Length: 110
Length: 117
Image 1 (cartoon, one colour):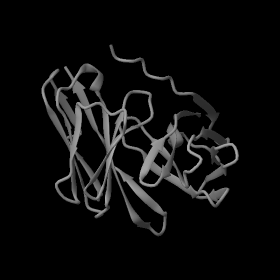
Image 2 (image 1 turned 120 degrees about the vertical axis):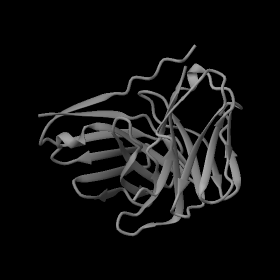
Image 3 (image 1 turned 45 degrees about the vertical axis):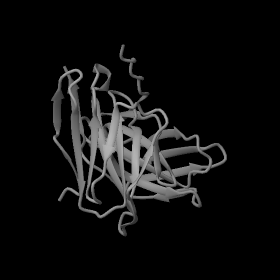
Image 4 (image 1 turned 60 degrees about the vertical axis):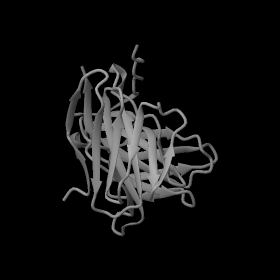
């Protein structure tokens, strides 16, 4: 029969608060990392990326932190808004192969 | 304007009836990917093309095939769909040069939601 889907972890935050979403990756040779936002019924939407020679990169309201020692990525969203509610995935690229990590559901409470 | 276009948006097929999903791109990217995404799960890479070179993932079932007749188009063929193949199928492309403003180098289509009856 069909396998049971994994339950994604959920992060609930109050509107206006900062959000931190974490992700672990497994391939120590990966050199490029991306955060995606995915809303229901849509394809992943690019948020921000970072190369392995950096440990921090900032965008508009978002910051990505990379810790290569422990193979960990985080996405920080400042002043979280209701429109930020979605599933967030990290992905790592090695060569031409883009592999997604487990996602996190972000729920923003008004 | 959409740069990675997937058709159809929704596809319903019968158990065991072959189905083809299509993806086209206007970016002239040399890499095209197909992902399967089941409910509440991360997208899972099925295979990708680097130009005409086909790269299959080791755990992709033989039931899934792909064709890339030219740079712009890539097809996903499911030879005998089972109930467990019901999922969102995502196409993505990547190229060596992204949009300078965002550094974005990979682009996803909106996906095709496949139902198997």
